[in-house]
Amino acid sequence: MQTDSQMPEGQSTVADAPPDNWVDRYAPMGWRPWLRLSRADRPIGTWLLLLPCWWGIGLAMMADRPAWQDLWIAVACGVGAVLMRGAGCTWNDITDRDIDDKVARTRSRPIPSGQVTVPGALVWLVAQALAGFAILLTLGGAAILLGIASLALVGVYPFAKRFTWWPQVFLGLAFNWGVLLAWAAHMGNLAPAPLLAYLAGIAWTIFYDTIYAHQDAEDDALIGVKSTARLFGRDTPRWLAGFGAASVLLLALAVLATGTGGPGLLLGLAGVAGFGAHLLWQLRHFNMENSANCLKLFRSNRDAGLIVALFLALAGIV
Image (cartoon, rainbow, N blue to C red):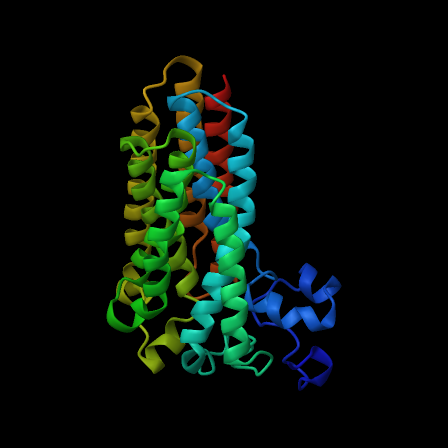
């Protein structure tokens, strides 16, 4: 394994990682390539995987009642999101290694830059997946089955940009699965509320990942990689408005489908309204020609999702 001290100058960090991230500042040198492979230096993806899980817990609390097990479900989802996002990113980088070395933003990733070998990455992938499976086993039969089923989506996603202009849909299918899993961990079944929230999350993922994909639109065109950013082109703002509106509407329907009323219903809908306001703010500030702007707006979706999670949790408690 190559360490930072052995790598050529300029390859010791990943291009789009925050400059003050904890991996580059504090992690032991030998650990850094593996943590970068898992995107530990860029936690926004972990947040975007985790937040739908917390939506599912909040919705279940609204439909049923809060229970002490919900605290463990929330923690388990947090640990699981770190592990499974790391495993998913490792798999993505293994499959994309011949693409990543042709794109300016991604050629500094651990595999194309030579920090980690493909066999080493495969071992790291298995280790993370097994640890994630151990966490999953604590969440009950329905959640376990859903967790296993999600592996098909994780496996297919890296290849989507090779055969469809809509790879963001496949990302949405995988990244929002947690809303179903967390609901099932609490309730032991599925119902319209989490299914509506799942659809809302998919629309939200298309919204934020299209913004993200505009960073690479020119490079993607040169190497033939497809994305909604390339598909929508100059019409992107109009498409974003449509998917943002769909996400807000579906989330509101999910809240209503829990059957709760009174203050809980008002709090849930207030969270949806706050989420919608945040998406509108992103639309007003979106500049597809400015990569820094796209990355900033993409990262801001952590806050958009947290608004929903917080208000749903409050709605479930009152």
